[in-house]
Length: 357
Image 1: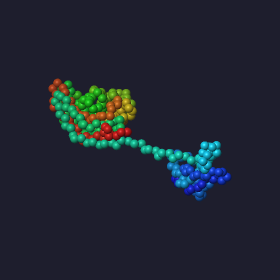
Image 2: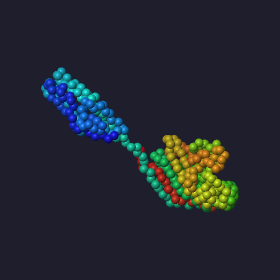
Image 3: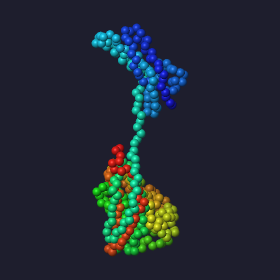
Image 4: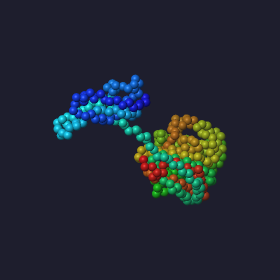
């Protein structure tokens, strides 16, 4: 219901002052009334019910409502008469307050403020390594304590060599965030996507049967695996999972929830979104979405359904100065040249120092 100010109207306490030796003084007092009280014209002030302003209703004061008080004209301001005059004036004002339901104006609620996200795009990174580690990071620092952080990129794994078993030649690639000053491969704190592939030789060869080629997983420490996933709850059997392993090509027997061109027949190309957010000062959460698919775990034995999805991982607070890092490790007794590319890299979040909230 809308509100509007009442027109000027003297308070009817003036009659009580006619016989006194005091001079009336006008004291401005705000009073709150509603449209309903004005529908019949200017109301009798004595009939206005007690009103109180509340946050859910905006109330407006009268423009020119006055309460008549008194000031003694005599110079004997330290006399009993003077004291009685001041007491009488205070009593009249208090009576007007009680009668008219005067309420102080409440401040307008301030809308919740938030930090404005920044979007950064970075040049592609082609990483090559033979029996060694190639690594790096971008210079920007990001504040996870001020808002969520989203890192999207295309992981191109077509340059990996699968001609040998893992103990002879293999590779692992990482991209994620870690606090400033920590290493760009397997840091002690952070969260990243770790990408590797099956240990068997020639795993990428076309196969009409759905098989396991590339593995993309969340990691928060060196060597952590599916058993570290704990969102929405820890999986009873971590190895029974969905959309952590991907088939590259040749499969023709897959059924839902497998998706052609996404979870199988991927061609070694993966559009990845790593989403991070803080839920308390000491706890963060992370999720991976790959080729538009959330990860999950199987719990009821029916592989045509996914029970725990989207599946994610909680991790400890990692501070307000995070950098995006990337790495490729080539290893094995006869390591070969390995290559991966990270393309279309885009980060959305709060830059460190850009928001004081």
